Image (cartoon, rainbow over all chains, first blue to last red; front, side, top):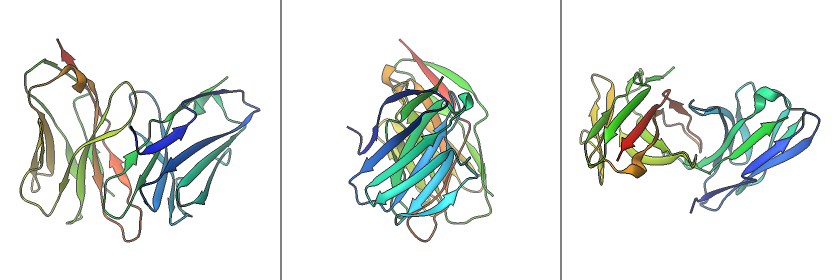
Length: 111
Length: 117
């Protein structure tokens, strides 16, 4: 069982849809991350929240909007995505110098 | 800025044999952490092993061990008694500790390991 839970596992959406990805952890970690991963490539960092505040935004297009409602939850709101946004979206959490723990990811397909 | 290089895109090994995956990195930092993550087709990124730069002793975790050469900036992963379940993509990653809660990971390009029955 993964300690970082992501929902949904799969998502298919049209370019005009609005959807959200959800990530939850109960390890007491105060840093949470969103990554985008294309097939056979390493994860690319998108956003980092530290103590529920956005601390890093890696120049991600505004059609991706992160939200951290509390220390255990992380959302990624999606709107007007492009076909090139189809990818695996991974959430991770960590604390201090400990390694990041990853969820199973959401496989996103844009029609 | 840190860089991590995994120059071998693919490797194959017979079941029960030993395989070594290479990783080099470049940094001006003296204090850092190195990791190997495994990503099987099921897609979850799983931590395999970690090494703190200040520790001279190489980390081991069951069948997995590293050869950490700090001066050479090399961090290779040795998998002994390879099993079919070791088939996965393996990523070498560098982390510079930050004050506060978050620390960025710098990943290598990854290597696809196939274990043959």
